[in-house]
Length: 391
Image (tube, rainbow, N blue to C red):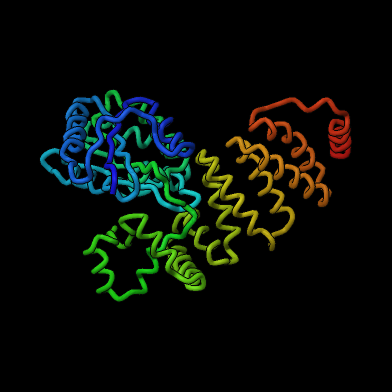
């Protein structure tokens, strides 16, 4: 294994910009503090400790542990947090390999630890309430020493926005925020397979935990490293994966799991609920401001919409157009908006036709208002629609 984790620190908004940039480049160009051999972690641990001490004096920091898959980022952070002579208390949350990612996934983990307004706001999908709750938590006098946000290479837009907010407010905070981030991003288009282990004998699960392949997380299990998950996924026959996804879907439905997780299993299994769940996941992501994830979920819903009515499909097409334009996917936005217009024309719905025509220039401008083109056709059609509606 070549290379080793690198530590980069920031205390203002560039952290979120860097996190956004990791989706557009193979690596992160922020200045690094050190590059070590895999087994020589003492310097990195000392650097983290050096950031924790001023954080206790209301000079908070955000530190990113950057490195390739399997190089030991998580182990390094676990080692640092296990030193109770330094780290007296912490909150720990992680991003998922779910495609599209769940909005605020690390906060869902942390909310289970703290409850209160954070858990309430997440359940209500209240984006502003979520951000306020997080700021309240880290600004309170008895805030945790360390907050860990693991696997930020899988973070959704809403989580990256949270990092931007935190980065601007670290002055006066008594907390060190530690994130792990992989710059050589592994292909995300594969299923999670933790549920497959449930079919094994208990002794096999215990052996996997002992060997470090699985990690116990309350009453559930997860892979320690994504590389192991990927290897297991590729080894399973397609038909078996469908059965396992169905089993996972039913079990998670009973627990009231996140719609994004349910949708992924439903789509993978070809379950009839896939459209409904993907749309619910998209609606939630859009409400939380995770526009890229919302567009992806709406696209998945449209791919599973063969059995739904034209009116419902038209609504989802318009939503897909809106969210795609918000992420500058202009071609996708225009295609969905035009297809929605065709749907409303077939259904003879003049108001929805007019709304689609009004939105077309905005979609072509990436979500920004723009004037209608100087052509009389659309304007006259809008006049006719308005006249029929008044009549």
